[in-house]
Length: 620
Image (cartoon, rainbow, N blue to C red; front, side, top):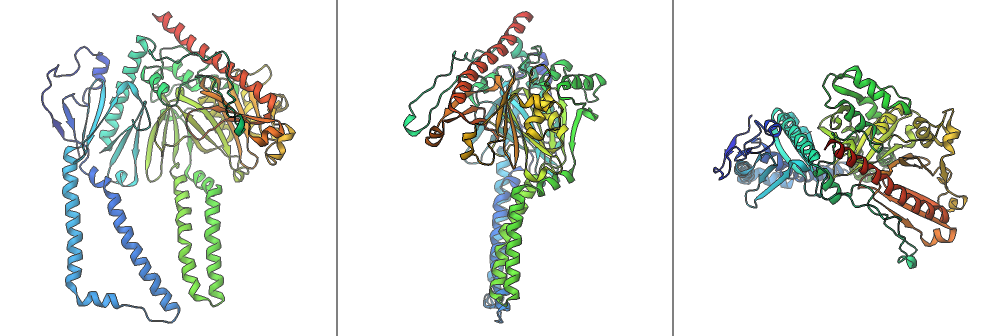
């Protein structure tokens, strides 16, 4: 079903809205919508958005029926007769039944009528500068997103919209948590067409801004040294900021991306660029049918990781099968805990039944239902990552995933701030790992930060390699050796593992009183381009933080740490699943790391920006 255009009043300015604009941008927006034309969303959108109310009514009715059946079963188990007084009263008063049915029909008609009115005022339009989305029957709302501030455009399909052939476009916009726009719902075909048109427009807009020069709100240089503030000494906590060493989570990152500095396709390769970004700059616009040149360039850049990646159809580099996602979700701690609770409750109910205490059998069995729902909820959350496919694209990694509800998104590699690898205890037998990331984006509460939900060691190394810059290691140590040593510590089977292990700084023996299980494994290593943190004992974890992405540093020493002569340094990144910390080092070592790393991150960011400035001046 096509979206109906809503024509508005003729504007006083140029009716095309494209006078004096870039021809490439105007061509990219051809067919989307003229500035004075609004397009309506799918007619079923208001009904789907109000579906939660109807689901709530159904749940309430189901809860009442569940209580009735529970009471009936308990009466039968105890030898009593089922109380059917209310049912008999209803049979003798059919008018009440008709009134209830009529009321339900009236409510449905009113919902349909107000949904139609709501649909009449919902719509979107696109011009050469922004996309607009309006809605609201009583309280009017108008959202606007500038194209040069759009970070990514994701296409999502929940279960019911997917069945109905509808999709939602989510615009990740720089500028704050509440700045994103969700355009729902469109027909899937129209959503895909609009997404392609707008991505082309966004690229053209940012490329034009990048060619015009750096944004006025560039990052300020770091101070020469981090300053340690001792105002929290009484509480045993000291804090210090090392200055901005990378894009800030909200404002600065937003401005940088908005000014066209996020993609920077015109800037040659820089030492601080991730391997994925360097690959994109080498190959430019990626075609659907990847050539051998693309695969060769990828393998050349991944040589430090001793990987040989295969680039498949449409740039596919990783596909996670459904059975692996199912098996890995069953072996996660939260799934097992929920399942164990359900089994214990069912076993208790059976024991009471065998002992002849029938009155307790049904209540305990009913009490197990929340555990069943919790187990299903955890399992379903993991199933959302089924059919996980990663493809190389000119804007980053294009990720598709979902079994019932599907999602398509692009992970811009040039905005990844930190990466981590995680291996739960029960994944060790299969050698699986999970990869996550922090990104400079407002995002949403339900956004997924997965680079890889579950995969082999080689797949994990591939994702780490694409998302991070070259480690720039000493002679004789490869990136593959370092990462494997971080993953498996002394159990690494790499022949050069001992050389890589010498790069790690372990926790002192005095920290065993605070970290009795993990103090032998925890350690950090510094390369020319990044910080590597080895964490966890039962569940292994490795964090990677490029120097150019560090926001600030925070030194902390509580009363117990002060007594043991220990200190901790938090390395601030953007919001996400990764919270990197150099934990429980000796006081002297922690302070030395704090001061030296503040200077290291400052110089790294300065060098990174200087390379971009020199490249722009060379083009000018």
